[in-house]
Length: 337
Image (cartoon, rainbow, N blue to C red; front, side, top):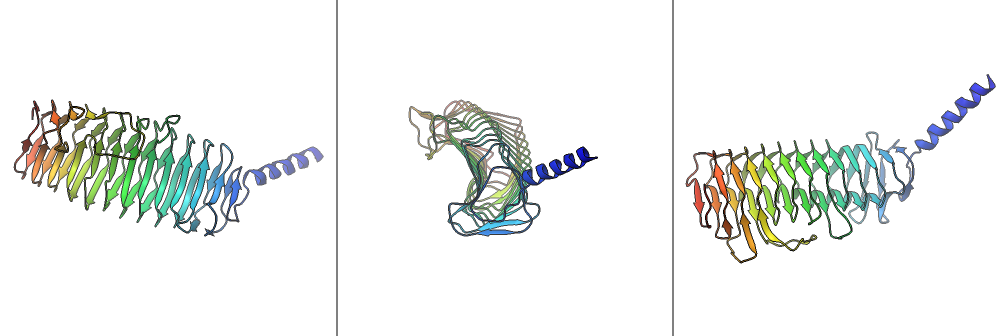
């Protein structure tokens, strides 16, 4: 009997240690925590900082809030951090991660923050089933600015974005092989999805609605990406654009071309140009080449496919045009539409 009581006490102690409660701003979190109440922080660099691997922060339906002078949850150099089940409001970044792999952010409402989730070099993150509302910067950003880091095989899935400056941005020569799937981006005032110097990503089954001022899905200096089965409706410029050498602050691979992207089976409507290729500035090193436009359905747009003079050897097949005129404007070289 004494042994049984002793075991119960040890189990209770272990549970209490593994589920400590974050009550103070500036806490350094080394083990799992579960919120018991809202927490507001306005001073310091980060409201909470993860300082160990395999740490879960369960917001438990409560709100972590603060000012734009600090990050909400900071994760630098630690792997397998999990943030879930609550709200984050007011910070310059809700979750700011650097040099950390296997980050998981699930079922979190990010409201009136700058960035929702910012990943600076990190692999195999899972950003799933969150809401991003009225963010003043890019809601989910994945960047590489350091040659020693990569940002690969991150999954951004099932999230909702509403009235954001930008939806999802992946930027950097070593920010490749990421997946963006089943997201809703509604009323973004900048790019809904933006790839810059980023290759071999998959973007599919996303819905983009009323992207007000600019292109919905933009690829710059990005190659071998698959953009398929997205529904893109109503915007100020293009539904999908593929550019070369339009600039960008992330790590560059030294290439100024967008090559062999596949744009297939997307539905696009109500754009000035549904699919736009090229900047219109042709140089020997800057080109949009070998991209495939297959089976897209384009309606109610000023131009269906617009290729500028820095495009060549691109091709289209089985695209459908409804209430769109002209279907194709081609100022490039050896394109076949």
